[in-house]
Image (tube, rainbow, N blue to C red; front, side, top):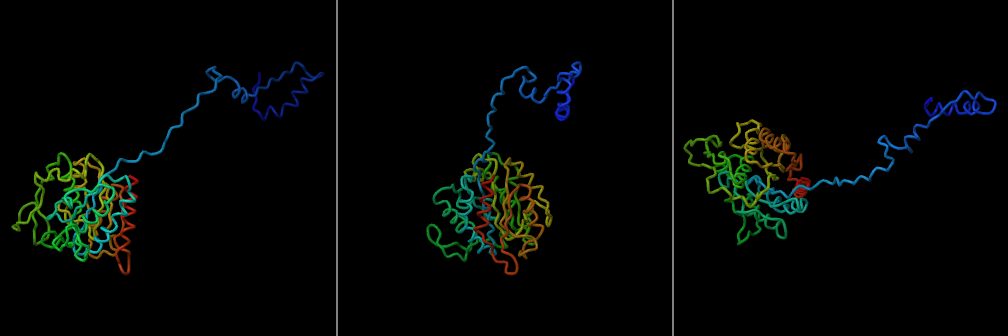
Length: 338
């Protein structure tokens, strides 16, 4: 038996028919097999000629992440008074864009001496009716430097200049330290580093680990443990939104160095995955008061965590405040995406 390819069989078919016709050479017998047809129509290799069972369709739609707590960190220096008011007015756009991806929202400031990561208003705000108004009040009346805002706060009065950071109490913006201390207040078992104490060196404006004689110190004490637990809940992943026109000058890092490895290690010790979002300056563009190395620290946290970056300023030549509401909506969309 000779098994030939289909094209060869087609070419030889007339010859085969001639050989097998009367008068032909009946001793020359050519057997052709359609191996394709035999394999298709005949039994399979197992000898079972039944059709294979239908395969169930598997649903591959991604499972949305569980709702996550969000922390808004406000720069309460005087230069941020107008921008912070815009953030307060636009926070509802962040909430709407994020939707059910938000579990709770807390607000704190970069003023470590005054707040040390404490939640503005003393608690977090849950999504739902009235949440945007409640957060507006938390930002304007309890956190931001909003002395130009004449809208009344709850209980009467308007935002006070007393909540603005000044050179005496907060010479440096410290978003990394502020977020670390809020998480220290939230976790069940804060590590020892949460209770490190620092003193203000008024000559350099830096916080140092031993008292230089200023008498101004900051740090957590045992009674601070659990004061932000209602914000974190049982979550192991949080989103942080930093709003500042400066970079980072947190006390645990070497001066003028962009390396954030010490803080990355501290967040790992807390057991919480932090996703960073920044509404802030871009180095060398509309940020004459922001040191490049300080901004690079925040960029490093955003990049490493897969967060988002939004410029606080609209660009040259005017360098006006950007469309803050749109930026907050884009951050909310990023939070909704996990």
